[in-house]
Image (cartoon, rainbow, N blue to C red; front, side, top):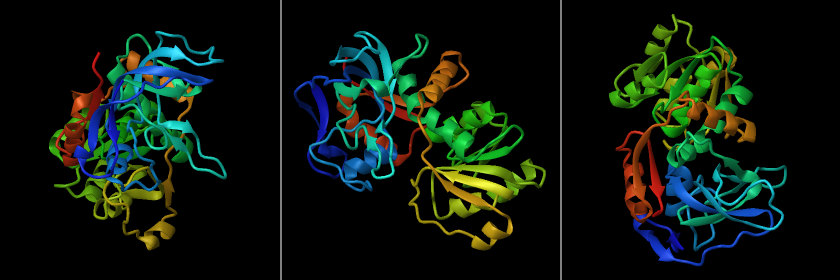
Length: 337
């Protein structure tokens, strides 16, 4: 098969399309013929550059969220059949008390390839009305956003939720998850076209945090109250304190990202005087939430933002586009048919 292989860490050009042996599914596994896999800033770009927080064994194949068709099944697999359209999320094994998570495309060869082997239990059927590109994006971000907002931030109907990076993959999912729970949403992004795209996904208001005063706008929109929840995945030293300042008394800031650097100032006086909470969580990806998100996508109630779809051979270009932040929406790779 053809796969994009990394044999050294470095710039996008270290990724090379190579002929490698097609894997065979082991007991309890399926072999997926990949039809789509997205490009992610942390789990792809950082891993390729050698700056990811966990060790990665070389040679390596990236790709945490492939969708495709079951090409073969291993011994003992009864839940999947050849020809079935399936998708998967990043987690091959959730974290436990003694070990961290096992992540596809980080701790095991991923979906930047024509084929990939997966535990059958982490695959999920794709509704007929959902294409592979949409399924990949939904499975990557939808269940995470739902879990973060419901299970950890405890969003309820009537809450005000500020979504930072609102036109990004997780941000756009956060908007739609918050609306599903009956919340009112302020979409915040760094360019007017990104704000407009986020508002089009259902947000009640939008703010350009590069040209507007974020705290002032959030207070104005909420009638002086502030927001009950900040949904954050940037961790930029300039933006984080501004987002934190929008919180109303007893508000919660939940974050699952550090694209902006990760080391940020925190107003501890405000933290304790206003009873605020800062939560770090990557959420949980459950079959029930994935089914909910894919079902909503099939019904047109969950929409994804797609910047471009590129052939697998253009993986280096895809990484450069994502690094430049020049697009609007996800970049997706497709192996040849």
